[in-house]
Image (cartoon, rainbow over all chains, first blue to last red; front, side, top):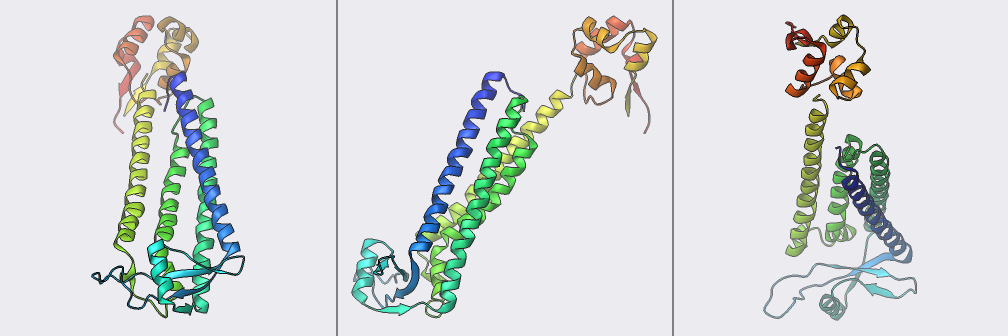
Length: 221
Length: 67
């Protein structure tokens, strides 16, 4: 897309800033995942049994994953009220062998997808800078990166947002029932994994249409 | 299909593309796009200017032939 010099400069700065901030945020998340994986390992879960949130509720709580911290003390991950309830139950069951493998696989997979997204964002930033020199923005090369980035982000979110499923896989012998996923979690999965990629693709389509229109205009003498 | 005969007209008038570019005030890049048949559309103002300088009709520059 050909733009005036000032608009071109501003848009380039904006796009490069967005891609760099995005890449930095992803690097931070990747570092956190690696650290948490190094510092802890899955050792077991606390069985909620028949515990409910309150006496009137019949909602069963999802199982909570217990991790072993570097200091060797068991650490429970979850909301304070849930943690208190789990702690009160006092039941701890070890995760099975396959559970460890499944849990770590999702961590490595997320890490891999994060690295891929970081590379794509950096590539997007560099491409934008290169294209800006020739006075063009939103070229097909950059659109292809966006097209690749959208499904990658979709897959990453699918894995991340389904963390309860991974927890259940980790303890599959005990909890194979997917109905344990909380409703709010389901909502997040739907919103995150469907709406966001769709929005990205829509924006990319709009850019593509703008390019086509612009190319048509450029070929008019 | 539409064929552009700008090169033929330029040869007839013994004029170069850069000379035409100066006289019609259209960039040489755009005229080259037109001459090589890459143009998707041509403005009436461009056609008007070219016809004026080359002293010809639009039909001398653009021609239709069956595929």
